[in-house]
Image (cartoon, rainbow, N blue to C red; front, side, top):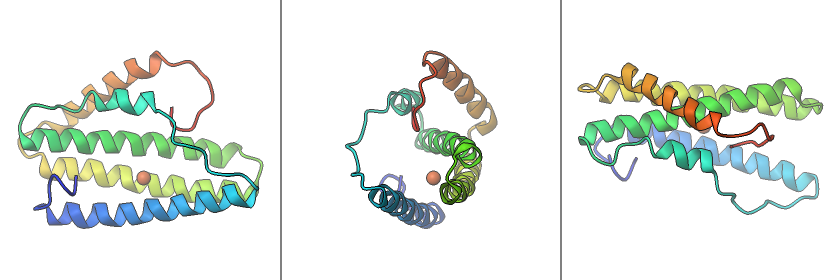
Length: 153
Ligand SMILES: [Fe+2]
């Protein structure tokens, strides 16, 4: 988004801040993996994310595409927030529970940031309507998956 919309200064600065926060969290996760004597695994294909991406318009105006991309990010962040909430409530390890709770709070902030930017920049778009359509689309996607435990699927 920074590369595609470099003229949107507020967006560029906030996305930079979020990217820094996310990479800090990534480092904290890797530390915990290493502390357990494990190694980081290879990236796995994420069908859920790929299917969500199909909702993002390739045509339409530049503004419509930006709104869709922001809503896509908002959805990812909102679902991450929900997963971290569950983990923060269910995991036995007290340190991990606190860590997941911090991540939950962070992801909630990212979700509201992305929705806020969609409303701010989507002046010609009915953002609430588009978000409802996206939720309905996601519900169909999710219904096709089983109940296997995964973090991002
Ligand atoms: Fe995030």
